Image 1 (cartoon, rainbow over the protein chains, first blue to last red):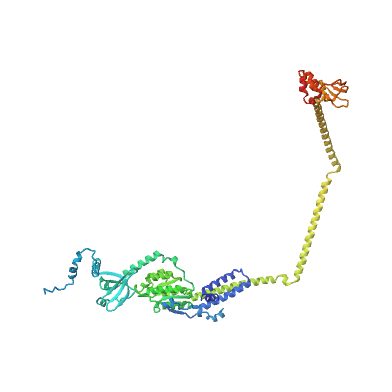
Image 2 (image 1 turned 90 degrees about the vertical axis):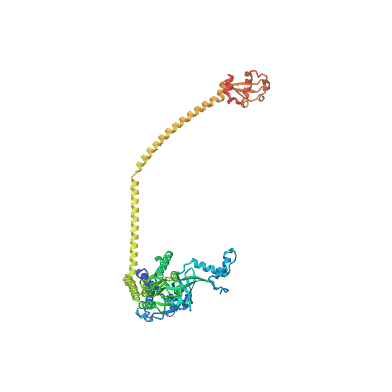
Length: 95
Length: 505
């Protein structure tokens, strides 16, 4: 379970992580210390992160899970990532 | 009538027990006697009517009501008989605290002490406030309200857990607010009782279970909420178990209990206190519009930064393309030729300079050489030679003089010890025909010719005879005769001449 989640995190980071990484990419490119080729590579990564952030924000449907006390105590409930990465496909064209 | 005494239970026991009362105390009591004594001790030691504040548990409401009154430290069983129960206007509920009035009795048949309750009243404002203040003080001392203990809330939680009643208005407020602000934040509702029996325990268990599974379920924060209600209704959130669970939570907790004016312990220990459930949802869900703007800004900055890099690189490329080498390849050749020409010019310059330097040196040297002519040099040398010759002459003369003086001195010294000066004092030496010095009597025989050297000449003589030393020894008394005989044979003559001579003369 934990292994799957870390994989998932690398491919589709949380909003906070994505925004943080985006900021550091911008800082690197703005510093002018990296060359053209590296800048373009960073830019592409940045575009991917922006897409990820928008994807997360654009989810219109609120997901609510209701559990009883025994559900949460006895290991019921699922982690939210199970069906989260299929949305925002049409966002790619927006950048 | 007289034969039958009327049975009076009130009077019977003292009478039947009167012998034992006065009897020595070591007689064992019967159980009934003990029970009786316990009962009278209780009645004697306690007021007739007692008021007790306690939480009700294990209530059984049949004809009579049976329940326990408890607090953290003790439990007392209670009975409310049907007559009193039917009159009571306060319905009892497990887990809630009431003020009970009644008297204490020892029920001998079951061996139990019970509070026989006449009246049940809901707990008064005063008692609740007192309990609240006590717990507040205790938790403040423990540092549970300290601001430095409180954790910051996540900026964008993946999931929020809400501990509340699934049917309450508080949940609906949270869901609605979160949905408007950012539907991307997931919500997990854990349904619990928020008032009444076991409510505090359920709330505490829910908070702990969420904390335990927060990593697994990606829950980044939780809301503990309850809508408005009376002070008693909200009492669950003033219980220590709830406060403890919130303090122990590994993820930040936002508490919103009742209305804005209500303050509960749960809110005081939570990482963030919200005035209402709506407020709690506002605190924990980010504003989607604001975040979209932020992402948009980041996108613009990234684009601008990349464009700047592109622009400056393009500029560099352009200026490189303007270099002659790219415009005219023959320029490279021309440049090399120019370099060769410059190098040879430099070389020629160096050579010229060195030749010139050499000439200057030679000129200077010859100038220096002609300044001293041979004539002058000869003159100088001659004067130097004359001076040397003069000095040499003086030195030679001085040394000659010294030598002569030394020779004179030496010859004077030599003369003073030499044989001739000895001869002058009257000594002589004799040599034989073969020229050897005559040293012993045995060397001569009669008829030998000897030559004796004296100071002023020689004497030739012929030996008439000789006498040995043994013979001379007899004549020891006479110095002169002995000396005469010894003298010629003494080789010490030259060494010790003065004392010998001095003695002689």
